Structures are given as C-alpha cells and as structure tokens.
Length: 88
Image (cartoon, rainbow, N blue to C red; front, side, top):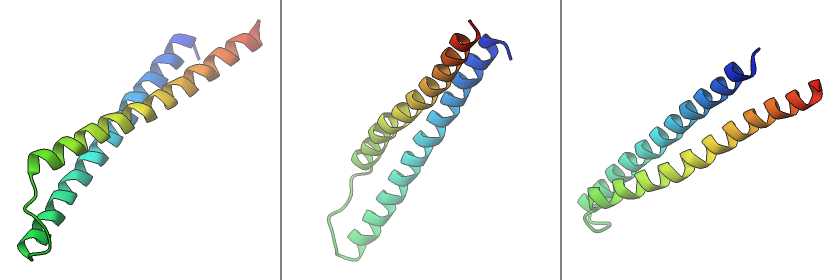
C-alpha cells in the first residue's frame, strides 16, 4: 500500500474516532440534563441549566475526542514511519 494512501487512511480513521467520541460525550450530556431535570421535578435537586450542562459536555467531548484521535493518528503514522525505516 502506498505511504500516502496509508497516511490518509489513518487520518480518516482519526476523524471518525473524533466524531464518535464527541457524539458520545454530547449524548451523555443530554442524558445528564434529563436526569437532573427529573431530579429537580422530584424535589431532589436544583433546576438544571441546559446551556451549562451541554457546554460542559461539549468541552469534555472536544478534549476526549481530540486526545483519542491524536493517539490513533500518531500510532498509525508511527507504524508507517517504522515500516518505511525497515525498508531502507
């Protein structure tokens, strides 16, 4: 497999991983808001602020998604680099 195609594959995989983790964290934020809302209706907590809950979820999602995507892309490109060194 040509090096550029392999590098592009790992980059695309990193983008897919980023999107998946970001979606996971935003989904968890929506679930957290729903749970806090029900607890408030039952008198077990304060009224939640949706903007705050979702802003925290988005921030956490960007951090985690970026970290995982960087690890995936770096590992893939590292294997390409090691493979290229072995051919010389």
